[in-house]
Image 1: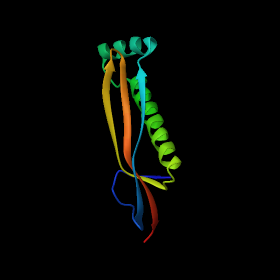
Image 2: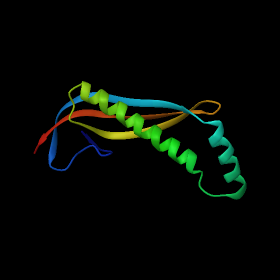
Image 3: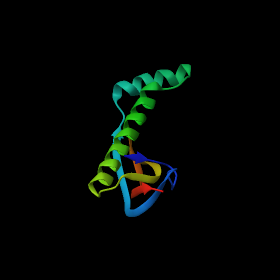
Image 4: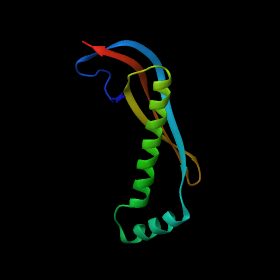
Length: 106
């Protein structure tokens, strides 16, 4: 499955647009990670625990979006975007969305 942030894919044309697809996940922080993050806040530097948490959340959101596109018969998802939102204390949502399409050679 092709996943692209652009509306087109080189060498392909959109034969059919199957509509918007999305995938999301809501992740909560972990107390152990919070303790490490607080220590990093004192000494400075990247908080790798949160970086890893957000990367995992993005991958899960993409996987869910791709699964929805495949279920519609798509061969690609174009115009992919991400959004994040605060849900409650210590929890955030990651949303990926795009257009499910069927691509054909030009």
